[in-house]
Image (tube, rainbow, N blue to C red):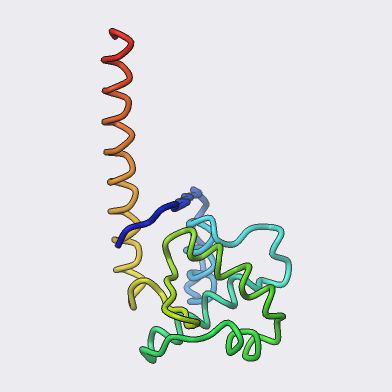
Length: 135
């Protein structure tokens, strides 16, 4: 899968001490830079959870369906979907959206590969620049 632009953010935060799946999902998304302090009503988190449920059912979902299920405006849903697509977590086909892979462990592995490819590209570019500068 080729990405023209992908923004990968990793935030080191303390893992929750409780054994609560919602806290764990919030930790995962916050660690990936998806859910920030500005998201007061946790709408991005809620969109992510609905996409996760859709992945479990193996059924892509439209922004209109997400808006209806979450009682959010379509504009809010589209804003969050775009952020999730920019991070490489969500993909779309037509007017339907789905998680890039259907399991969270596989999603993290895909992100790990994305980061490794990006670092390889940066290392190669740095090597070329060093050579041009005679370093």
